[in-house]
Image (cartoon, rainbow, N blue to C red; front, side, top):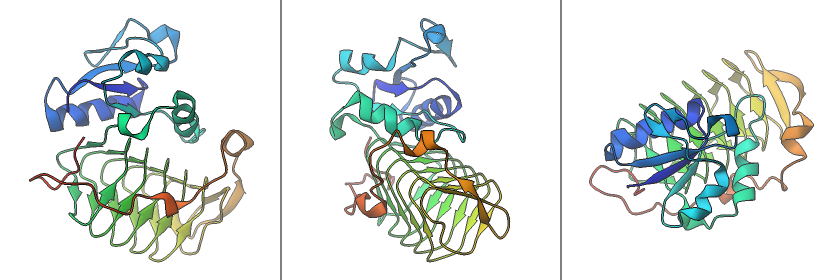
Length: 244
């Protein structure tokens, strides 16, 4: 992969740039794009911030990943992808070389797997998913489009993490459960029962804390769930990682 455009210039975007360069060399990333005018013309970790996100249309041959969002507005990535309106084939997939990805796993376009995460067997990861360092997804897990799985999360087998769900750092999810669309599971939480869509749960064992804020739910199309995960694994090279 050469000439990747990373939409965003914050922490997740910078981590993605480092993962891409670790996997594909110093020429893997062309630049960052960011909608904050104050960043335009600056550099982030030695990479230029060329301008706003709409510049993806000025570089039609460049692969793209969208790396925005935070625990207070985890829907931002979905809104931006929808606004850009790019075809699926424009999106790259970034997998850090230390990630352990089973041959039976599949990863959708625009998704990012950071260092030392593990996908053990028949794990399906949808499009535009963020998988942070040292996440473990075990057999038959399904992760829906736009989900975010923060550092150190451990997910038991046969779990469905539905569209747009956010799993906070260090959370644990028991096997066979469903984490509902656009829900949020807090840092260090232990989930022992299904988490309904659109709710924030905290604690060990996790319990409902409050509804998801309207700015997460109301600005989005209807949640589609993990059923949109890509069911067929893309072709793989000698490393076992999907092409980017």
